[in-house]
Length: 439
Image 1: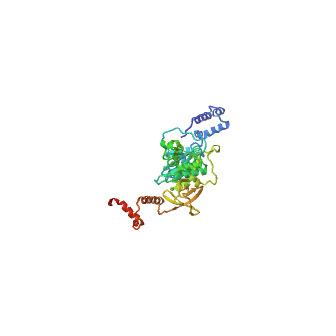
Image 2 (image 1 turned 90 degrees about the horizontal axis):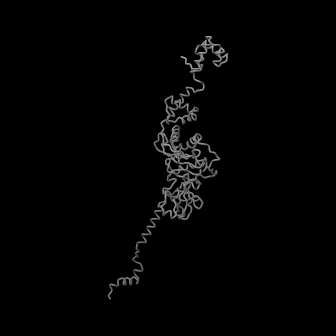
């Protein structure tokens, strides 16, 4: 069966009339809009092949511009066997990065839908809409920080925490780090990545965790009159030393950039960790910093305009180990000892105990590498953990209590005390018992 379009049916009718002599060649040329040579060639072809000469010869045949059936089958098999559950955009990027197959996202949608494979995002949960907040104008003006609790590793039911930071203006993920819990150390690491790769931001935007804000939110009227203030947390003190501000909020919608990031990473990052059989925190952190984040930022983030950049680059000799360290204020025991987290440390000066006056105030720094250092009069001293047989606090308390008990107990002189045999003692005993003497 040969199917003709309206235009092809008109051409066929003209050829029939031309062959029958009802119209001349000149009239046929005018009706078809063809040259005399082309009109005569079509007439000859119609006489030999009939109506089959009217349609184009390539009709019904695959064009050379399309993809071969072999490529189509390979794409479908890859999705079913290796990438099942990946969203179609992510799958298209994986084909380009890992299999050197460059196809359009619209082709992937048509091909997989034709093979009865639906997108995993087809029935995604609809959330209540809220008015978006305009992005900041300058890069580094505001960096949003948060942590996401999720089962990040395939086959592992344990929840791990991914700490992250994203620039509000450009959408660049400036740092990401896995930990077993949401800790200060995780936020220190993403801050270090941000400073290394981009510079010091102007301020951070966080939630109301005790890492960033004190649990005591308000002071009483009496405390305010006395001039008391709410102490900053150790992390905030470290930020203030670096010249970085901080804003905290209890509303997750206020920091929607980082919240939206978690939705993307829980889909994309989880799939890629599963693909490469990454099941440990160390391997995941290496993959994040070396592979995933550069690829993610090149795909989704904007390029920093250096005319609108508030990131402050640090010097080459910037010591991250000490500049990002947290510290406590403590007093010295016995000229060379300190306590931290119920542990005792001896202060060292050239591998020998240092001499610092007892009860002197010092700052105990916990460095990023986990070591403990003491700052006294602008000098850092190393420390070494020690085991003390008699804890300092207990010994001091026991000595004080013993002194009090001994002071309250009456002193009893010995039998051979000179006062007991002297005339003074005898006269005193007579005076004491004078009521029994005769009058």
